[in-house]
Length: 304
Image (cartoon, rainbow, N blue to C red; front, top):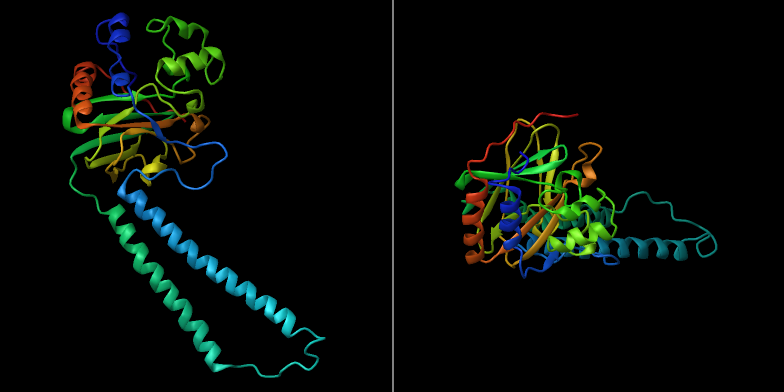
């Protein structure tokens, strides 16, 4: 479903509707060189999952420290020099009861906190906005189900995003190569150099505070729609329609990637979501309907 120009190349260049929703937005959900850990949480799901990760990390750290201390104690206390005559017993009822009950208590505690987080993620609430995401080799197609329009989202800097008619400077752009021409293309689209291979030519736009339900499927092979800052990941399986949901708390740009190995260009099908105010979303939606609704879309053909 390569985006069709509505009237002419000049009109498309001047309209630039997806870019309108991006003005003033800060890129929040993206990887940063030299840092470790999670991206800043942007949804309640992400807050819950990151808290759960910290909670379990405390438990496993305590277990590792305890076991290591026991090993060191045994090395010092029961080596041949310190204990030349080893004990001959084979059972110790209190210890056996302890090492049975304590792991049970630990597992119950983990389950008591992790299952509600899992259920919150899997129980899909009523949607304010429903968007269908279809994975193709190798790009994403989006349909705003409630408004009967859709568009495709390609890697910015990939062959499908190079359009000399709309942007003459694209004649100097080499696909997948970060040179001066590519840097200029990123800047013109409102992105920075470190967002190369993360940014797309057209982004999903959602309002903050709204419950978004994504319907995820695949058109050819298995893909996976993932936004780390939202703590969502759902495989798109051909012939099946799965769902995930999120509610973004902060305006900004969030990046993701296809997270299921799907072919030679798997690394080049990023995901870009722009969370904007309700007013900016309404303005974008009006323009997007005018641009995309009713345009003829070619039939996608599976390519293995």
